[in-house]
Length: 277
Image 1: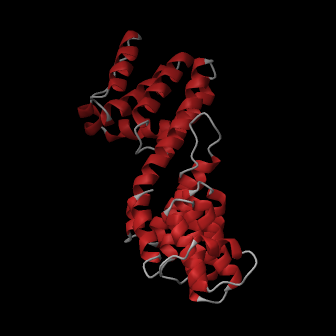
Image 2: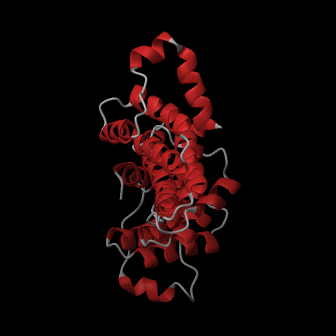
Image 3: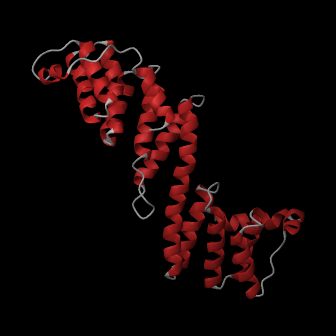
């Protein structure tokens, strides 16, 4: 659990009473129970990391006492308990319902953050479909855009960077496969996606180099030279530029230096036009 998530949960549950005994739990399904007792039984289960049980108690608060202040709190607490139980779909559903019913609540930023972090925890490796990763990125962006000055936004920005890197990694994985198997135009499209959509990630230098490799394999040296010049201008000390330089030198293609690019901006502009189509 992140520090932001733990701190937010602590704020929501700050004013609870002492938890009641285990015998009370057995009666909950059959007897109407005071709201404070239900809530505190849920909190007690949460403290003992019995997250499924905690979520059930918080749900019962809302079922038995739907118009109480405790019901509003319990909705978010159930979402949090489900998150801790790794029941992410349930956590998202609870938080979305809270937002729909209480959009102006001071706890709304936390609800949006719970949704985002629940999507984020479901991100798979780059070999799988990335729809969950895209959902996570969209949810994290909502947190940042709606509540930019909150601690939730600060954490969301960090996770957005990692999420974009993950999506770029997927594009790179597919692009490399196309390149290895001779589908050069398809590989170029994938590497262009990385540079256009995820250019701030760690994958950009490799994407540029792989584009050079693809154009060289197609025998289109001028396009390869233009891409290589962008790589050299932006990442002159990288291993990827060193590999690109060696590749182009072997083909007898001279690359413009950074001074040439600065002296004649049209060189860089033409190269960028080639990259972004």
